[in-house]
Image (cartoon, rainbow, N blue to C red; front, side, top):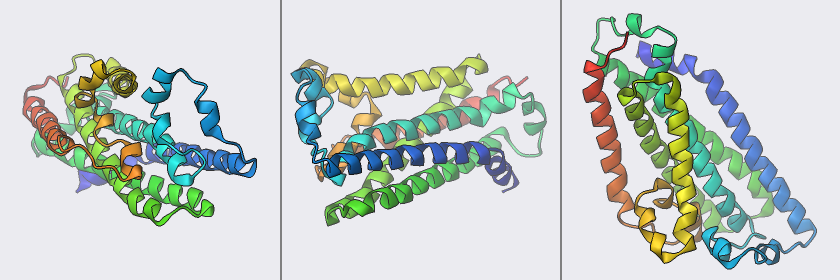
Length: 264
């Protein structure tokens, strides 16, 4: 428990900064929606000016931008990516922060096993991720309630944020695994962020041409798409199989390899 509290205190400032930043993004998006509605501006007509391949790749054909449900489903894709980015960096920092600050030697000589320490630090990061998701959910409600969204919006929004948390757990465990396997902790954060952004970019390729359809099995951002969830469409069954398997795999590798990792 002391390790968990230590981690929560150590990462509180970063969590607050991330929460403020993402709430500001949601608030700004809701303000933009209000401006568009007040001016009776049909953003869908503007979107149709994009090339057809880009129009479909960005799923513009599935979105009604002039409704709170449609507009949020669009920005929800970006929010999921940002949540994953926060989680993967938090996962990397579970170990790499101790190595960079040269505090690992004292930490891992405590009268508990290394794997226990990592588990407790992982739990602390899970708590922060849950807080992050909760703050984002509440901020979204306050930002979009003034547009009087439909009952479906209030029903599907909690489900969307549940899946956001699941995606965060996946990237959190992946970040930890990458950190444990890495030999250069100074570059691990940049590599993890780069992989996350690359996986997000792959989602655009899925919509460009059917030949890229296989990529939907590779990028987790296609597993629980904001547009799919907020439209009420069913989530692909493989998502519920692949996601827990990957989390277990990453966590298992991390706990196995940490016992033999050189921490000096």
